[in-house]
Image (cartoon, rainbow over all chains, first blue to last red; front, side):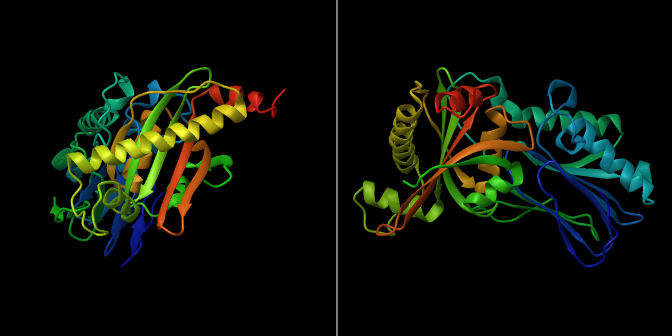
Amino acid sequence: MAALLEGTEIKVGIAQWWVARGNTRIVTLGLGSCVGIALWEAGTRTGGLAHIMLPESANFPDRNNPGKFADTAIPLTFQEMVKTGARAGAIVAKIAGGAQMFNFTGKNGMLNIGQRNVEATKQALERLKIKLLAEHTGGNLGRTMILDVATGQVTIRTLGHPLIYL
Amino acid sequence: MSVPRAGLVPFDEIVHLVGNEEDLVACVDTRVTGPAPACVLFILQGDSAYYLVDMLLGRQSGETTEMGEMERSTLTEVGNILTGSFLAAFAQMTQLKFIPEVPALALDMLGAVLTTALISSGYFSEQVLVIETTLFNEHDSISGHFFLVPQEGALKTILKAVGLSS
């Protein structure tokens, strides 16, 4: 999914990703245990944003949408950016999300899904040799993530706290 | 409580059954064991949550401005009681036994809370079966939603119990 739009705001839903260039903002709303991955290349001012919900594709059934998993969505977003002219070696990343929204007292392995999403995201970035510049992950906060494609700045919006700039 | 609606809903759209991604909500997540394991989510809009806390703690309307330990435990208890009656009604209809576990509360963005609850209860597909009931009291301006999200296999048991499957 790619667009070379000017002066717009693009909304990325759950298990989706988007690549854009120019005077554009890419937004994903309400990240909980999901992780938002913003990729950016300064030379061409190309940006990509992926909203993943699960860590590795190999561990889950129903693999028809690669946008769902950290290990498949990140390479796809990266490749799309390179395809549209971004220099692979200059692409950097900022990530947000991976929260634990509920405080369960039980012993369910899936409950730490936020942390697992963050770990899988970092591994996927490492495999592609993408430098992680900043992150706002973990805790128990819902987050909205906005990538300004013109500047590479990432803004995190939460409820009841001031804006955070990455 | 309204008559329940049931259907297969795409992940992104479940949020819009209740409101917008960044709306403040209180969500009580109760795991249910028995012949048809499921997860019950009780979601209250933020203003309804504050209103309920005022009412239950004997405060003036609008007096509660912070959700501390006491307020959160009040909301969890409300969710617990209402989920109990929801399950009792559902048990009568299906003649199945539903055993609720200890509930957990999250108070944050609707998108973050709802997707995290669904993912951690084992929903990895883009579509989720939900049985939705709304709780609405015009006089007290309280509105809430229940979602019963059956685990894989449990749906069949439920449909069979109500005579909708051979």
